[in-house]
Length: 155
Image (cartoon, rainbow, N blue to C red; front, side, top):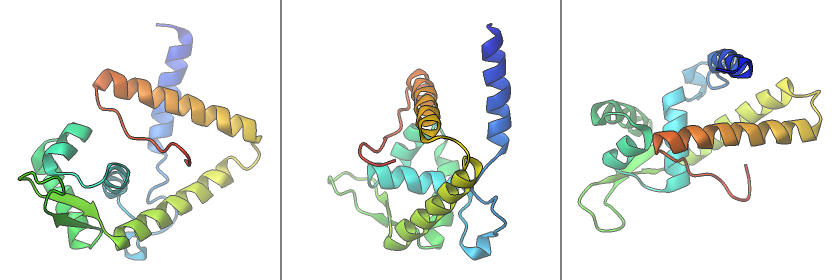
């Protein structure tokens, strides 16, 4: 294994300990999303309504875990269960207007935090970093056969 790969492993480990979700001095009473809710809402928003089976395939998690996670965000009104728009048997989860509002606010807060972290970075460095992260993530997704939908026009 190349020395650079060791450095990537170490820095990725350090990066994984920094979560901007729920790390800005807020608590859930203030409306902050738990990490799992943030990721679930993001996926449903990008892909559209999804069943438990589709979520299980997308995340590689068992249905019981996803049932607990979706039940929690459903109780808070961030998603709703709807009949399959394509006429299938499984009911699907769709993000609500409130879910969209909360997700947008959370994302804006995270972006503001990242702006503070990278305040002294030139724009071209931020662009390059984003490109390397996208490449790293898409290669992981390719190997795991679980691609994540990405925004085309706006990130």
